[in-house]
Every structure is written in structure tokens, then in C-alpha cells.
Length: 139
Image 1 (cartoon, helix red, strand yellow):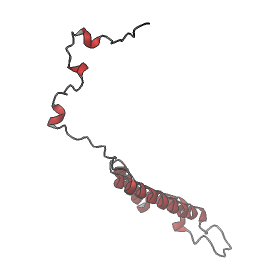
Image 2: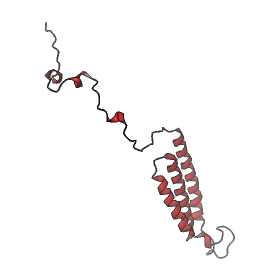
Image 3: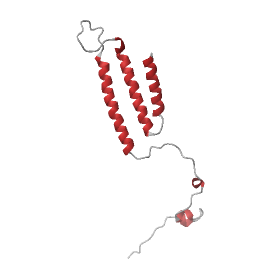
């Protein structure tokens, strides 16, 4: 029961951190999620009520299954390598992962200024909307 509660708390903390926009919190959420997955795999192996997986046994019903332990060892190595990769990407990457919305400033509220001649003319002026063509003299 304690193992299930611990895994549930780790998953809840991981989901909370994964929903944050900062890259470091996402990485920490991934680490918590990988620890929770390792605990769940070990709990599925049911090794707490059995003996060690290797040895000289006459009755193999009490021997622990080594497969969940191998899965957890592999998962630890994979999670460590992915964590290092994400940390390297967070350090060397651009600082453009900020998804928060900034409040509008006074400069954003000002009307845009016309910069070109076509926008500066009045809407009823036909010279601004008519296409300009040049005719070359014929010989």
C-alpha cells in the first residue's frame, strides 16, 4: 500500500511539473515520472515477498523473478540518458520557451503610423489605387 501511495504522489508531482512552461521544471517532472514508473515496475515484480532471484534453489516458487529488476535497471539507464540530453538542450538552446503572455504596454495601444506613400494617401484618390504602367516608344 505504501508503494502505491508513493508512486501516486510521484506521478501527481510529475504531472504538475510537466504542465509548467519552464524547461527545468519539465525535466524535473520527467525525472519524477521515471522514478514512479520504476517503482510501479518493481511493485509488479512482487519481489518483496520472495527471496533473491539467483542462487541454488530446490524449490523455485520462492525465487524472485529477475525480469522486473532487469527492466528497472534498463529504465534507469534510459531515463538518465534522456535527462542528460534534455539538460544539454536546455542549456544550449535558445531562451525562447517562455509561453507566458505579457501585459500590453502603452506603446502597443498607440495607433500604427503610416510609413509608405500608398498608405498616406486618401482612400478616394484614384492615383494611389490605379496601376502605373509605362509605355515604351515604338520605332
